[in-house]
Length: 384
Image (cartoon, rainbow, N blue to C red; front, top):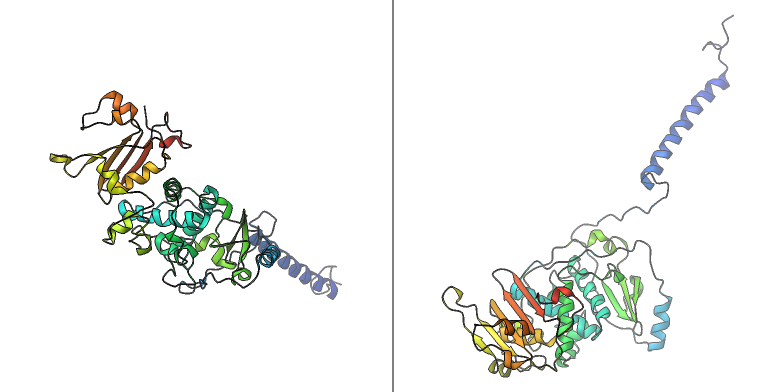
């Protein structure tokens, strides 16, 4: 008789149970490894990241065509679209790659969209500006600021931003409003973000109903505006990696609003935002640079004390035109405006506003005398 447990005499059920134990152990290990990979070791399952489609396949950009419904019906239908808060991602800061006139043209395109789409409202302007920057980074849209803003504007209907094709640009806002929009645009092109709208690429007011509303995900509400992203991969951060051009060219529809667009097109900038540049230039004192400073002119101007301080930027841009170097200085006290490049300490201390552009150095800066005009951003104050 062989000893109990000898392989030859082991009962069949015990042999089978041994193999079953091995099999169950293997299955358990595989399951643990699978769950670990899905949760990242944290124990909470996460949705796998969408896989990027081929580079030549991008979603269609549909024109802003509205369904023929009443405002009340549009609001009711828009309210039924669920607000998606899962996987909400904030935009990365954007810094425009170019400088000089190209940057100024891009700024004016962005400012025009912000002002004519949102009015003279800073929060609304920043929300619109963020959508435009999001689009410029997305492969489905043009890769420049002006290109995004004026996409489809050659058509009477179907443009992406209605102000570019409905005649709204013939209406003029005040100098102060235009300058505020320029300042907001400049900040967004220098790294400011508006996180509330995330990676939205589309928006509309709640009293209209675009045909594309149901095909996108509603991710944010800012006052009466609804903001949307594409579903799937095209609404994730991985899709917003496109390089944005730093060489925006002139846009004909901007010529009446922006002298930098007008001058690049060879068009005389007349009635620009209500400012008579020729009259202002006639009252200015221009000190021409000589020798090594040739081409580095300085403009001395008496400013209107009753004018909005933001309008000083507009005046400077008009008078500097397309000069690659321009130094502009203004005084609200005309008796202290210098008549030559020799400036006393009293005159320097009384200076109200200064603007300097140096394309060669890639520098552009506007500063105010904050003892005379308070600024929200201390970086806009002259140093004393």
